[in-house]
Image (cartoon, rainbow, N blue to C red; front, side, top):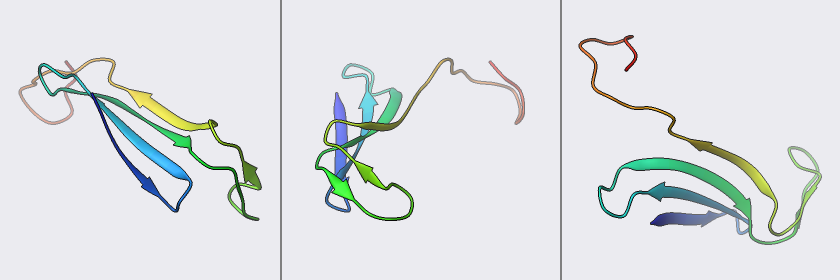
Amino acid sequence: MTLYRVHEGYLRDEIFVDPETYEYLGYRTIVVRDFEQPGAYDSVKKGQLLGWGSVIASGVVDRPGLRP
């Protein structure tokens, strides 16, 4: 399942969630409309992927700083 929002009229932030457990799986930011702006991005094209990430491992630990 994907939850998303479009912001600034050309960027779509998507969050991926397992449809059975509702566990967070990852995210991505994709361009939904060609856009030009001097500064951060000179120009971006529809369909361009600007960022993504995913969960590699998760678990419960006994205290902060520990890893599963």
